[in-house]
Image 1: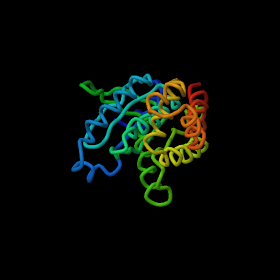
Image 2: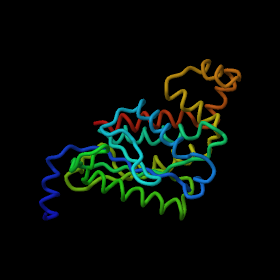
Image 3: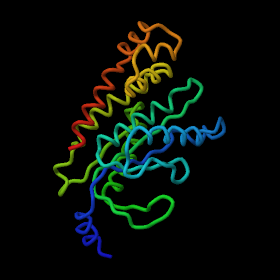
Image 4: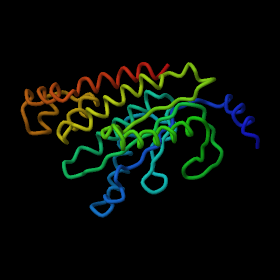
Length: 232
């Protein structure tokens, strides 16, 4: 089939934000503990928190994929996956992500729907870029965003400002220890400082200091702003 025909046809398809993720350093982690089981459990918890067109699920090897109606939802999901995987001091699992906004279409059926389209192509380009950037100059970068040009000039999120946000977001998250990640996840989920203090066995004032010192409020409010910009 002619590629021009495919591209024109896709303009009648829905738009969405595809997510392709993989586990950082999975080749050596596989000998240490069941990272795959931990990953699946984390993806299930995120799926319960962020509505998806296609929930996050493992595909092949150390990869997983998901599809969201908006870039804002997709980027929130990537943040939550990193936090959910960082709740245990002994669990050293991290992921990188490519998020792509564009058209998508289902081209096959199965346990995991087979899809194609510019959203998925952009997501693949984005995760390749994330890996390249991480290995050269940005060791804490884990997420990159790409959107199709042309008919999607009015995409909810522009790539330049969004990736500037992701550079800062991922750097902050990478500096958090397990307790700080648990506290950040808790406030994102709407828990009070008193609840979080009780769960951690510390005082409420210690929770407050941790949240302020580690940039938790900046991370939470940044995610909210991206959500509000990335849903129109």
